[in-house]
Amino acid sequence: MTDALDLAFTNGALFDGERYHPGPTHVGVSGGRIALVGEAVLAAIGPRTEVVELDGRLLHPGMNDAHVHPVEAGMEMLGCDLSEGYTREDYLERVRDYVERNPDVEWIVGAGWQQAAFPGGAPLGADLDAICADRPIILSNRDHHSAWVNAEALRRCGIDRDTPDPADGRIERDPAGEPTGTLHEGARMLALRHAPEPDFDEMYAGFRVGQQRLVGYGITSWQDALIGQYGNHSPLFYDVYRRAEERGELIGRVNGALWWERSLGLEQIPAFLEKRAAVAGGRFRAETVKIMQDGVAENQTAAMIEPYLVPGPECRHSDNTGIAFVDPAKLPEYVTELDRLGFQVHFHALGDQAVRGALDAIEAARRANGPASTTMHLLAHIQIIDPADVPRFAELNASADMQPLWASYDPQMVELTVPFLGEDRAGHQYPFGSLHRAGSHLCGGSDWPVTSADPWLGIHVAVNRQVPADHPDYSERVFLDDERLELDVALRAYTLGGIEANGRAEELGRIAPGQLADLVVADRDPFAAPAAELHLTRAALVYVDGALVHAADVVPA
Image (cartoon, rainbow, N blue to C red; front, side):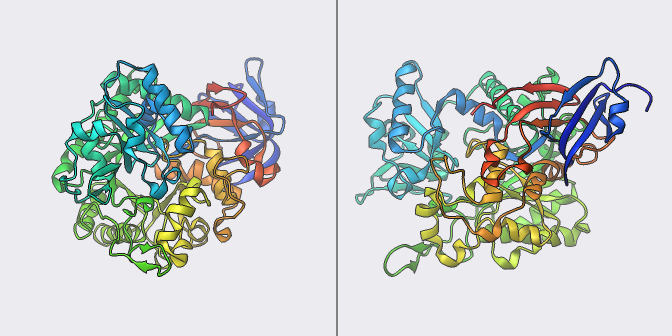
């Protein structure tokens, strides 16, 4: 090239999307794309070139979060947000503070508590009654599969001892059959559908806050993992992203996962086709359909091949194998048709039966529609995988969408998961290393607001199989040491791997000439630091199309 560069990064370490280069190396940007890599950059620096001296820091592609809910997370940040708490007392203090500061809010709606803070994972509505008895309170837990409600919420929602458990959920009850204040899965929805829905402006405000947090972490692209009517999610999220793009306020490159309404079937596909066509080729696209196949292990609604255990001296099996939300007999038909139409399917699959059912459906689609080199489908969460199913991810070109922060001995794992799985199945959890060794495609996500959106915190746990030593959930025990990932593998999952899963790898995710210049300057070189310090890494500078979109010494906590 003969023209001077617009932007040059000099004298740093480099992760190019697949490999680490300790440097010093250099990267040049022109017209929003990477123009040069290596020594030639220095010769192409002109008087108007902006030069960023890396001084040994790491330059890497923009992060991708392959499973995140930023609009919902932003709205929760603006509401009764419990996500920074860890104990019953923390949560009650935050609820009390919100109630006192918002005397005119009729329905107190929020989220963020963790089940391990309460005996049996089931908080009591009486605790909320003591704070506020005349206004309904509905607080979803951090994974949004359960809700903590007060008596006024139960009254207004018509939930009492005579209310049967819905087919897809459970009401916690006392020995007399009275609801105690915790609602799981579909029972949570019985309450939430009575709460006022946020209006469009509140959703848009949530999007702006959520996007700011993601970009501050160096996340320049993501998959919004649920756009549709479910809990605090809304079909209007689709219009939120469209407004943001029309206004020039959408910084990230986003793929929206359209919600598969589990009470319906193939008749909902024409609406998906319309939505996909309307945003084709934009910064926001809708090329994915989200199927929530099961629940979560902590409340025993994740779908299992064998029943959960009943902890105790006898350690016997229960009669509960969890919940399959979409009929497993119909799932192959649905996935085959979506695959034929070029939709990616994004499965919520935690239990080993849900994982197997999703893989069976993908296999049926491959047999009907052609080889596995076509659309890459995603299985998110993948908590428990039967070893026989691990090789099938690579065989079927199915991406393992990891949420690494969950792969540690936190209280939820120790108290609410392992005792109900038993020793053998507990060893089949989050098998990232096994998946990688079997040749599986990996991508990384947070499921924020379920857990932190900080990608370096997720990478830390993927590499160490422990949360950091200063984290409230820290345990000295390493969670399944053989399932660790090397740093370059984990970082690839959070950059190029996620972008491949989002279908945009033709011009994103690699630091190579011709690629779009979505780049992050880290505040250090994490490859040159101890693995125990990975979580300290921060995004110092963030660029999209070669333009600076974030600069900070410290990313917001």
